[in-house]
Length: 284
Ligand SMILES: NC(=O)c1ccc[n+]([C@@H]2O[C@H](COP(=O)([O-])OP(=O)(O)OC[C@H]3O[C@@H](n4cnc5c(N)ncnc54)[C@H](OP(=O)(O)O)[C@@H]3O)[C@@H](O)[C@H]2O)c1
Image (cartoon, rainbow, N blue to C red; front, side, top):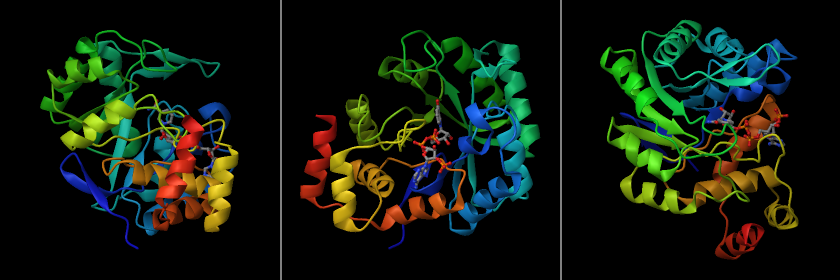
């Protein structure tokens, strides 16, 4: 069954994409354990029809973007690469907020250079008031910088990540916001109301940690539903997100070609109402 598409910026992308964060070394720092395997994952993704890749220059730092460029440049015309800015990495892999005009401008130029692009398709401004979850605070100053860089032609579209509904409303008063990328999955459902609003408005919601991130999802209900379908729990977690709302775009991360293939195949799964009800028990 062909995977459906949804509009991201000015282009339709398949709802099953790929998140490249896992291609950096342990702790998202330094080079990957297996450079050739990282290249193979990206090439397999694109060969399998993935047209939406999520990245950042602070993965590695720089490493993930450099691997994307090595694997895929010159890029297929339909490939949308989404990056994010707001942080830099310290010598011990720390995530340090980097939101001044100078830092954001440098980050955009670093992304362009390391990806080998003249213009970035989508740049997400990631909230850093609390690095681990959305927290209130004005995003006007950094978003104004990104909007200036957009007017200069360096960025096509702007999105937000790790933000609250209040910040989304503030952001939409400054520039068009084409997507929201927050933490969301079968067990972490803080954004249910936000997703419903974005669905009504036709704005893509891109859940990060769709499989649970650094602690992959585990639950009896998930395993039971997976067993009844002859699928894996990770596939069911992705299929649940695809059925959750039509504006959800997936970017599951993996460093393994086998896991990539498994994840892409989740687009063919159909969860019955009974299965959805059982899965809802996990978050209840
Ligand atoms: N905006 C933000 O703040 C933010 C934060 C985090 C992530 N992101 C983006 O979101 C993307 C997705 O998040 P994520 O990669 O951190 O987490 P994720 O997709 O929830 O899970 C990735 C983890 O699941 C494992 N995995 C993947 N497929 C699997 C499978 N079929 N079976 C078993 N294990 C599997 C991966 O290990 P293997 O490598 O062994 O497969 C990895 O440990 C990232 O790549 C990144 O682009 C954004």
